Structure formats: structure tokens, C-alpha cells
Length: 86
Image (cartoon, rainbow, N blue to C red; front, side, top):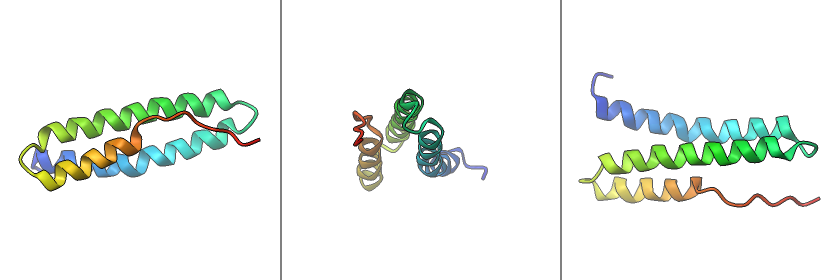
């Protein structure tokens, strides 16, 4: 992969699988006894996902389909208040 633009897109795809996996891992580590662990991880990983997606959005200004697709992905990473049902 010599093209830097292609490398960034591939990295974004990689992150779209890695970040939710890490969220699940930290949710299992924290569990119900230490919810601050997974809550902090969800906030940090959501922020990383948003920043990376917005950075890709800034680089894809000419392609409107790609822009809308990445904007939808950024909304998915927007941190929301976690709710516990205990």
C-alpha cells in the first residue's frame, strides 16, 4: 500500500472493527463490580473513533457518498450515556 490516501481508508476500516472489540473487552474486564473501567474505556474509545472519522471526513471532501457514509459512522461513535439495567 504505497498510496497514503488508501492507507488512511484501510486504517479507518481497521479501527471500525478494533474499537468496538476493545469496548467489549473492557466491558468484560470491568463487569458490574467496576463499571468505571468500562465507562472510561467507552468514553475514550468513542472519542478516538470520532476524531479518526472526522479526520477522514476532512480528507474526503470531493466524494459526497464517502462523506455521508463517514458522517454516519462518526455519529455511531458519538459517546452516549451508558445505561445499566440492574
